[in-house]
Length: 288
Length: 314
Image (cartoon, rainbow over all chains, first blue to last red; front, side):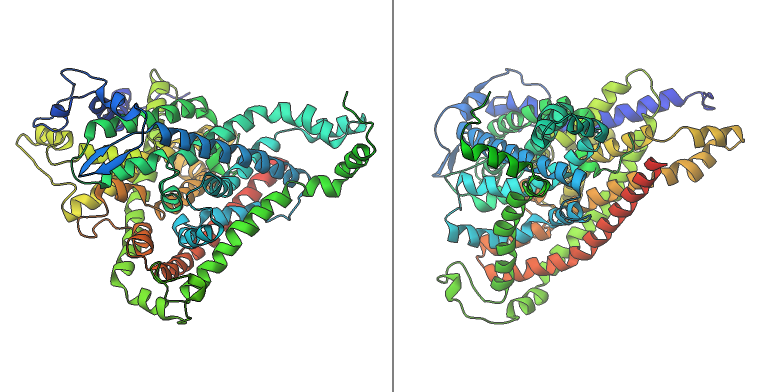
């Protein structure tokens, strides 16, 4: 390999990369630090970069059981139930989406079911801004009595995750050698047996990655959740938005605690699937 | 093994084994879902847009037709048109910035060096954070007496107080900044993968023939990166046009309507103002505005994918 002509290049590179790393870490650092600060240190001039007396009080406050109330200008923030709701809705929605979507991806990859354009049609539906369907969705869900229910939100997340699942699983299914499946068929295995003994083991990691990917998307979703729920079901992003728009008495500490709690699992999951993150976004357009 | 003794079980298994049944099996629930969830919604959207219905006015099926009135109102609503224009403008600023930054960072991290993995992991962090949290987080940094102004003061050598959240242009920059901060991670990821996937032979051949680094980049690498660039542009511009979370949590779409994107405004028309029919008409206008874009995006995706599979077959 030819040497770089410019001797200072490593230095320049590290300077630039460090600069962007600082830009990236600064907001995350600030949120985590604020979540450990006492109320007196939330807003000061000059701002405090370290909590002088680190405290868990913010976490205790938001994690005690109960429901959030907004009374007399005072808000109490309780997020145990929203965490549960988020887990239920994103978990079940993503799970069903992975089951259906991967089966569909397999069927399309092997038999071309639905025609050549089918995945593209599904994808183009997904590209429509969600606000477009949000308006009639409310009216539709009120009529069906699905507004503010788990079932309603799960159905919506199922529909919005399916395109991603199909496209991600297409990439994984296309890597399964067809010859292997044919060989198994010739040896007398049924289609279902092939699916279970050949395809499933070879795409298992893909299924996990896909599930985590759409789970992250659903966990983060705000607009549709906010539109289609009210008091019965409430996800973490909704709660954060509620606290933020209730202007009086900005509770920086508890909000930062909620932000940190909401971020942590996703970052962990994200790092687990770091190598595969792109598949969900690349629509099969990436050379391996 | 399983109880195959039941007379129905064997027949069911044979039925499930037929190719026609097997391959259509996953299609039924998926198509059913779309047919029951999205199709009625679209029809309802069109229907609602032809009424003048508000949530407060009885049942929607009793509301009278008013034809294209809501469309006329929408097109005369300057706040709507501004929100639409603003959304495209934000995307036009944020997306190129994300592409350039992501590409630059990916180029810098292209060859292995000490610390590369740490940098890569750090750069990917933002895209794993819930967008609503990003909006909220930045709102904390950008308060008048916040750490961001402190840093600016440090660099400027005097006290600088930019009112990021309560002045027109700074607030718009803040929202664009939130998008750039979070999604440069994605363009970085896309370009890193793209650069890693470049075939070696043409580059080596060009080098042997004495091409300069710049010529190689411009005439060989960049054309080979076309599909990757296409992904990045399509993904980011589609998402940027949906922008909702940042204005909601960072600036509450203010000050005034300075950061009100079309998604936020439609949400307000539909829920805060309860003008459902107007919101429906605006939604349809928005749909038409992005439909052309979607068609082009899908066409590009198809073309690039076909090209890739043909290449793979050779």
